[in-house]
Image (cartoon, rainbow, N blue to C red; front, side, top):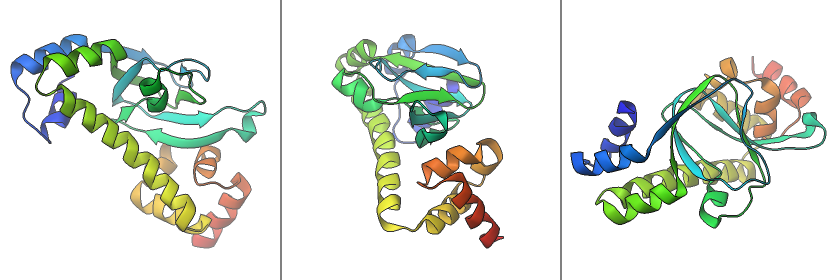
Length: 190
């Protein structure tokens, strides 16, 4: 939880009173590798901060080979099916751990309480929303403006650790190509 406060205080100082209220609403969860945190059809009730681990965001399909991975979150990042969290509607996608994970979570109801009772609550909410929005926006722009090879090379240069810790089939889906196309691009760029 200490790392969470450090993350927040990179943007703004948090009073001890505000932090005490906010942190009293947080609870720690531990998940094993390949565990579903949220299933499609469920309403997202939490926003979480990843203390350890990697989480994949994907659209499930009957054939697991056709699942569509459209996001990853890592250590010291936020994770949520944020559209479901805000709308209180069922999620169309799932959250799955790709490694053992430790997350600090806050419920929808507790976050509303933090918004109402603290000076820093709205800032914390805004930071979480901005982080989740930027991930989505950057991916959309990449899919619209770059070739598959450019998406691969940009991802490789920006986040080389992905290729060490995430199966290539998920990376291929994330950049919008088949695993076979990713294999050809990787051979070409060596």
